[in-house]
Length: 191
Ligand SMILES: [Zn+2]
Ligand SMILES: [Zn+2]
Image (tube, rainbow, N blue to C red):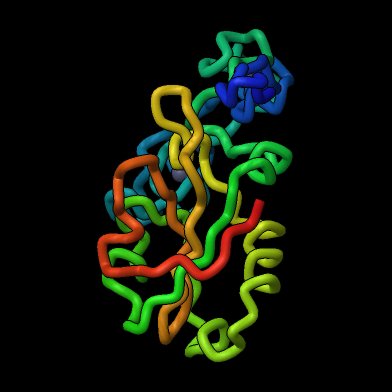
């Protein structure tokens, strides 16, 4: 996908993940161990160890058209796809430091949280916002498009909320006030 100059996204076709662009997937045949019942050798329901109780196994000799891409091998990107790194790098990052513990919402990835880290105070005591910004910028935890885009528009910024026991990477929407609700004061602004 590409980002247009106005910030909106242009989705493009990509390889289908179900068939890896191959257009077909293996067919299915009855499991030879249980004859398709899924039951174990002594009749235990769903206890066949060969097919884990499904009663079927892949038939590589007889491929069938892939359903998600309807045999095309390619599908359009969607908002459920991972945001490309080059677009992630265009989102502004901000560090907020709040003297409290992580909230339940932050620790268990609730509303607006992309990911959170429990570091027992490392980020808090290091007091090095630039290093933290670089770490989050280079993160492997890239969000799904729908986490940072709403109605085709990117979020205003990504907030790194540092607390006494860790930090949460959250989405800041213009006017939502969700990252300033707890009396958060902004310490650093990157880009
Ligand atoms: Zn496919
Ligand atoms: Zn079986």
